[in-house]
Image (cartoon, rainbow, N blue to C red):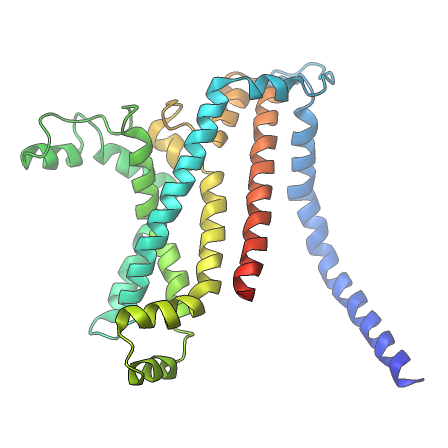
Length: 298
């Protein structure tokens, strides 16, 4: 057999072997992910209700009504604001914590383990814990702030329209900043120490070293952290629902879809909201991946 044909045959066999190994995983993924998504999209074009009964095809009527619903647009704005604020805070704090933990000092391992604790706590537990702490009647946060003279009277942090969304953002940042810090710390430890030594020998200061050495080599880890956290923030549900319920001031797109599906039992309308959320997440994912490719090339 000619060498070129042998190489082509070997490559074809490898592709078939890879396909055979991936087939079970793809089958399970189709059952648990693809089919529910397609079913939800189908419901979005019907007048299905949670109580049952025939579901008739009504075209894009749910989407038209949704785009004219001010509460939907408020939930979209809340979601985008939440994602922008939480990811920004987590990226900044995660970078600071990762840089601090990347240094060798006594008790370094203990500190690294302690940093993971907020991330290890289940989201529902941490959200409920903070909801009690922020309570305007018996919450410890108000007790400390009023006792210190920083507040004249207790504030209903998660019930007030002015503070509900900010409170949820800060709690989410407390919960997930360790995740970002761990990803960035792993990236920092992959940077060779020789590069820092060479930069110092050239007379570069700490700021110059960070901008010229650390940040460019940390871009892959930073990009992964931003992608994961942005996608999580866009489809946020648990921390907002546990802390604030259906409060319009902090309602996200996921909470809005749940309200339509469960409380109002309008499966078609709620599925339309879920479908638009899915489209938004897909668009953001494509933008991130393409921007990441351009970032790596640069």
